[in-house]
Image (cartoon, rainbow, N blue to C red; front, side):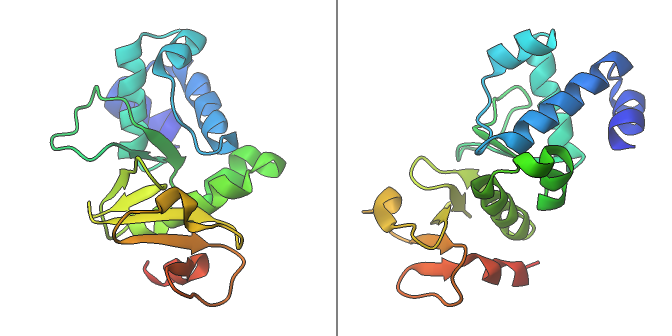
Length: 178
């Protein structure tokens, strides 16, 4: 309903592009995570770059996606997101079905649970920066601190572990934040 009613009526998006936006959502669902190449996407969908950036902004605004930007003040509507996640893991299973990537599921879950109450940004090192202070790297039980080595306030969030140790936190614990 959000794609077929809200976007065309409230954002004046041509109905012909709704199918293309659905394809875009499927690409995001199947990616690990989705790092947009706006020029290639706009060419593939057949719209100009600024229109595509507007569509990405609208998808974030109606909470179908979560767009991560580098830490900066005054996020512009025409700024390219550094990473794009679907809003929650249910959308991943709906759009990717058997092609849902486990790493994307982990990161989407973390972004959904933490982003509800805290500011999330793209991290140059690691996967997420929370409140411009903490860096998190998301992975499985064997994930090491290699990607966040040397950073202060950096943590590994691991799936498939029951308890944390040192700077390693179980992913399931973030489900209690919501």
